[in-house]
Length: 583
Image (cartoon, rainbow, N blue to C red):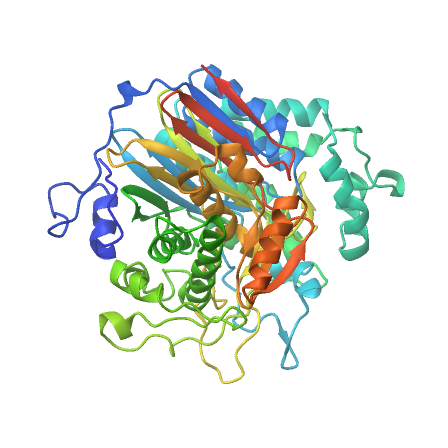
């Protein structure tokens, strides 16, 4: 049985427990493992929320058959890869957090992987870093996709419906056609200007038939996608990671401009990794999330520092200022220390230590200052850490998608999936787009040669802002399933949903709708599309923050809150999603 533990448990011991080893070790004195409720106590029904109605309907089709939340999320994501290709798909990867009453939590890393031929300086030319456009649209940007392998790993461990059943909705839509949504259509003219989507032959023929961009309301058929899924449904992942499809992916990645090194051997070598789940206290509740290379740790850090910064009598404006400062501190630490834990020594125990976070909460920078990373060893002792790594210049473009699902037995899944930037690398293979995930590494090599935690290396997985997260009460009962797309802004979006529900008195939809506030670095971006956002922006500016007003933010929060009276779901109005309930 897998157990959840607070982050104060040493990470090595946490890994041991999460691996399912019982009675071989015990938590540190004073540490508690929240009780896991029995599955038979669940009486709230089922719910699914994601960024497109077709996907949510596919999830519900699985839940109506008695399927596990994992079955539902696989079916829904296979559809998203078809109807929302700008955000995720079979050519990308994902992080999946699974909760089963009585069985605990599992974090599955289906993140894309760097090819064996990748080098630390592969985005450098003549001593200068390639522009993001050149990098984004290059073959070098393509990493080994993880989505299909993640589907199978999760289904083998948790699924209850037959494997082939999960792909039936997506195969039907791809074969018979689906209605192009306004959001997909709105992307295409702009993508024709800034990317190779309209010039690469395969993607041009699909998205720009007869040289004209698809329009909202068009019926779009993708027989190649249907055939890919039929093969995966009948043959399993080997149909994708070996043979014809793997060879086509390799050929597309190696093609110019700036061809990469991805090979069929890289495809065959891909593996899903089961990593530790990290949990931290927030006012007698447990925030549980994904460990590195995810940025889920920021949810624990932000909540802990925020709790130390606010008082019972704090005004809402003071709470939002604390939210800003907690973000600034957490982002500075995340950017400096977190990378692929299989490649670099991420000081996760120290960064999440309550003693360090309490001290870090006192280090609020002047509103117009540029935050810098802290050094946990100055508080906890040990060899100084801050000077080990060079400054990180990673930029994540706001793409990606998120799904939250709870099934009729109380099993829950929070999954965030991506192809990185919109439409990935714009290279269409067998009906799906390849990712440009390698640009999530630090592309610029430090002039002094100092290593970066998120540097490129063969087999490494780039740091990700994706933060699938759940919250539990003191009894171990599920309270919330949340997550969002949005590139580097994801930690801010997800933290807003958590604090919105747990501290600001908002329901699920209110938390999703609340103006987004992103505080990474010196500037604070505030969404002012609604009047409340303008009030927030003006107040922060009056406090001295360098505020950047934005008409819109690219969040895609899809969350479910468990209340005594039932499930309360939200679909971010900034996307096209819906919430459906099964009683």
